[in-house]
Image (cartoon, rainbow, N blue to C red; front, side, top):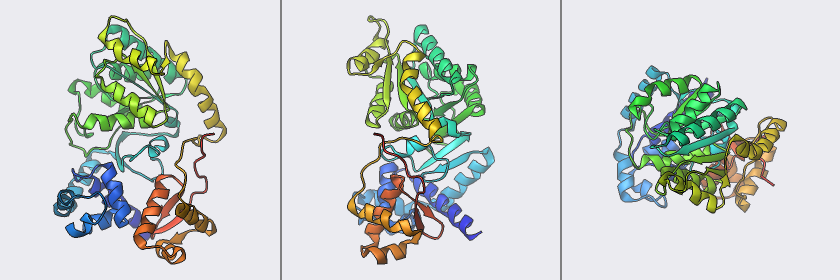
Length: 379
């Protein structure tokens, strides 16, 4: 019972810290790394917070003055009332592909269900003002991939996104919509029925508090999650200023494949895709062009029980020493500090780094253990 209560409290404090508007993912991890836990951050004084590298006085004051207990209570009540789910980074079920991107969302809100097979996902994105050609291509590629067990990820936007979701639904497959607003807001409003269908055949997810409205600054953050959930990103119709190109750039930075569907040379909606093709994206005429690249990953995942083959950062010498120390079994943080003869703050920082890299896991009672099946490196 005590272990369960501890886990519930830790998840609640992570949620509370993520509710503070001034605390984005990078700031979140910097604070937790610096002070050891989300609860310590929430209880810290302004002076203590400013001692964390990169934390300005303005951010420290915002955190110290934030009424997090009342705000957390309201958020949890709405989550329960609406039957939503929460995923904390490091929890079982948190999307493993997403977990290895830079500054993954500390908290994800969930409507619907995430399943192990969603590890085999492809994102399809493009223009909000899609042509009939673009919409038809996106829906057809989506349906063909979904029929082969690929989960389709997109952003619930007008145009190509909506066509991608509908293609997967039509084929009876799974699809995930990543929102640039909270799950309590339907945007665009005409996609309310589509959102319901996605929730019944997949999931809607967001890193934003439930009633957060859509804002321009939210969509680049949403785009990194779209690409982070997928093994590859397919761009169907995109102007040179399209947000779909941001998603493609995120995919490249995350080490994911990028595919682009060519279009009419006279159409402005073709320029972004043609630019991607010139830069090295795979020219894509149909689902086969995508499938031949991801099919080996499907086979590899099946052979290893859907374990992932991801690029991981090399370990620092002190990190390697901690992992080696934990070979003997779980240890509490105080015992690690004594064994390693390093400052408590540095140990806390190293432990968080190792959790982000998937090498260790936190157990109840501030104990840490080496993961029995650490992620493999891509060779």
